[in-house]
Each structure stands twice: as C-alpha cells, then as structure tokens.
Image (cartoon, rainbow, N blue to C red; front, side, top):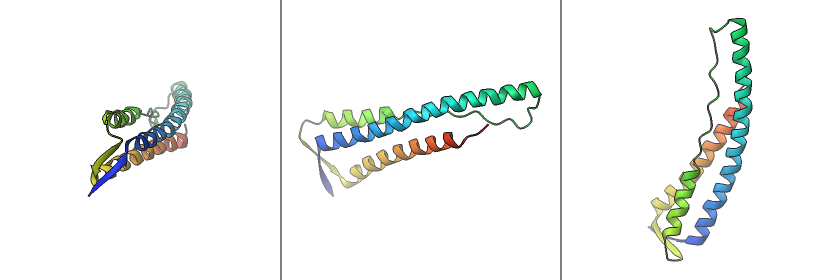
Length: 117
C-alpha cells in the first residue's frame, strides 16, 4: 500500500528526533568522561596495590548516529514535490529506524550511568 507523506512535516519530525537524540548523546558524552576519570582512578589504585586478577573493563565511548539523521534529512530534502509517496514498508522502516536509534542512545546513557568502579 502506498502512503503519501508531507515532505516538510516529515523533515521537521526527523529534525525534532535529531534534537532529542543530540541532547541525550551529549549527556552520554558527559557521563562517559566522568566514568573514564573514575576508571582511571580505579586502575591507579590497582597499580599501587599490585592486584590485577579481576580488573574491570573500561567504559565504552558512546557512538554518534547523527549522520543517520542527517542522511534522512538530505534524502527528504532531495525531493522536489511537497509530498513523498512511499510504500508502507518504507515508511515503517524509517519510523522504526528512528525509534531504534533513540532506543540505542537511551540504552547507552543508562549503561554508562550504571557503571561503577
């Protein structure tokens, strides 16, 4: 089944998602820096004590998916017509992709917040 989507409305929706994503991503980066500093102190204590048997892994840095949003916006801007016709599976893929990126970002934020050294 074909779906007709207002191009400008869809661009604004993706831009709103990008703004929300970017805010969470910045929080993740801040928490990552703090956790990295904690990890550094943790490793320093281990070095001083000479105990390395059960060393914890360092925090993993958050990765940015900002380019995915920019790519979607560029694709939408490439259309000349005020509406875009796509089949329902394409529309569903776009929507689920945006949700998936947001979910991944939230998961990273929560995982970093839960780390302790």
